[in-house]
Length: 358
Length: 160
Image (cartoon, rainbow over all chains, first blue to last red; front, side, top):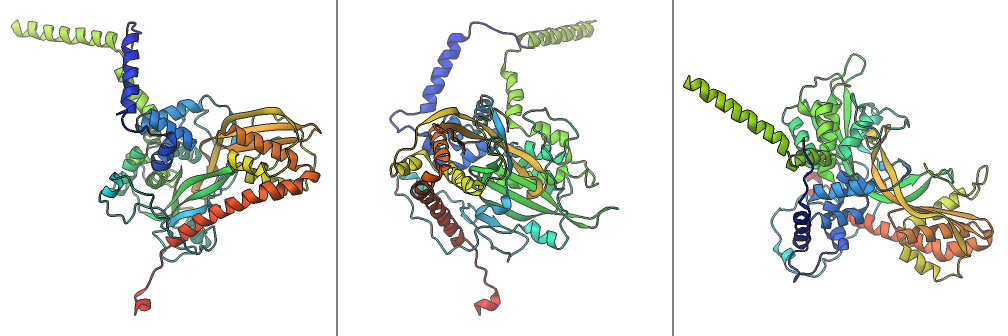
């Protein structure tokens, strides 16, 4: 229990004034603009949009500036802002197969239609600090260009499906559950799990995905495909009755291909773990795909004993805004609670002392 | 889609639906400044009255499980919409990603004006096609940069 305490107003005001000053840093240095955050800290913006579950680059950049670079605080700000807006509706499902590719790699096929496209990646960099970036320099030379072939590329999972070796996904256009409207309930079906994972904390999902690779859960994943690029978003406004594009967003998709030994009703085949996130978020998409697959254990008749295979454990704890709220509420005044604890401890000690003396 | 839907939709299949979808898509991808710059090249658009908005809200973006299965809710995105009516009763609509009220209103005004056959060709030529060309050129540059990062594998046989 926590009690309202009066008298802290002036201290709080002063604390917030100091926060504003600390946020600005040395005023002799130029102030960071929101546009600079958006352009030059783009992956932080992407992460805040993903975990804030709200795609708006400018708002995410503003949240990062306001939060002094604390990305979980920034996601919290974005989540709070979205509650002030009306919901116009839902989009048609994104056609990631029609993505305009910036990056597309497969670890299962070397030569595949469309090829391996590295895109703007940290992979193969030496991870040595580049002190040239510490000096103010000119803009880098434009990246090289080469004649492009087809704008879209077939999915690797489609290649396996042609051979009948990939478990098909259940088709259909059923209205998916929405955890922003109804609280989580269990058992959670896959669309609900995917929504929770898409907005889940990257670090938490990364650790869980890693745990499945290390033996906590029986995972044998291959990266069938990672693709990143732009997809059109379409809606069907009721006043029009036909679909229109409202813009394009960048997303990252990961298809993890996992062996499945088969069951009484299904032959041995590959199954999918799926990751999809706003922006360029490859680590998150991969972690999400690993955890999506591990959470399918029960429906595939596999043993489900590892943490990453427990729906309740994963879904109740993957949301960093909720987790922050509950962990940080411990900072609120618990004076009355603690007073009773104090009295209890004193009593126990007094009793023990008395008994020892007797 | 929730919310009030002002204006009327012509009954039956609209022969111009494909054309309208195209210009609405082009306008949704263009910034307010870009649209305004193209509008400087044409006679002023007819006067309009706002029916709704411009107002910003959210659309829940959906994906498909496994990329091709049943839909799931990926996350929301900000969207700004606007509906306008011309003096002759034509209604124009716009839904554009983001929070740019000016873009949404310009797009709705153009959607209304483009439905007028006497104005359409001139507006398509002066506004929509140049915007579409600029968008295609930007997409082509991205595709060309991606193509430059495509791995060209050499086997040992090739290297001999």
